[in-house]
Length: 197
Ligand code: ADP
Ligand code: C5P
Ligand code: MG
Image (cartoon, rainbow, N blue to C red; front, side, top):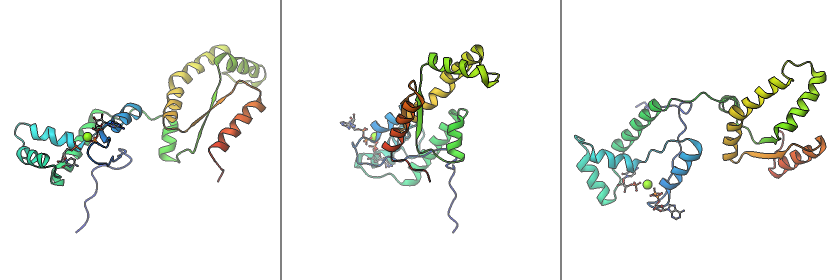
């Protein structure tokens, strides 16, 4: 018999399983991931309890018996509840537009490390205006620089924060000389044991 194919693909949704005994902290840690990563938490136990209470459910009494006995409910029932809850969740929360870094990681290759050069706007502005004296670029002027800073704060910084939450970011103070900053960059790379390959 051919094996059935999954209803959803990993491109469509990222699934994590939390396994652990009753009271080990699955629900608690799931709530943390929901808060910091935007995951949705689907608890089999919660879904079963809701189905048990649902008016007209043909499984209500059966679920109640299994739960009271601490036994695992027949998997077809539970997996079907999970599958439908996933469909509902995907329909209710269409994907926000992907940031380019996230798109890159999903379609090309995940990054090993994110080096974030932390620099106040006044320092960056002075560097850009100086570069503008010779660069010939259309955007090295005060007005374009102001717009670029705004875009950075609104669009790029949340991506840095996301990578930060995943522990991928090495933050480097970028106000010093080129040599000073490079020393910090090297330190960050070496501390993480990153090698070119
Ligand atoms: P599970 O979903 O695995 O059954 P819960 O997340 O509901 O577990 O946690 C069971 C109980 O233990 C809850 O009251 C929760 O607040 C508490 N708890 C969870 N993690 C910890 C922890 N690391 N230390 C102490 N208490 C915890
Ligand atoms: O995970 P939770 O503690 O909410 O589970 C409560 C009960 O729900 C379990 O003891 C079991 O009867 C049922 N359950 C199940 N299959 C699962 C998860 C929970 O039958 N995958
Ligand atoms: Mg739980």
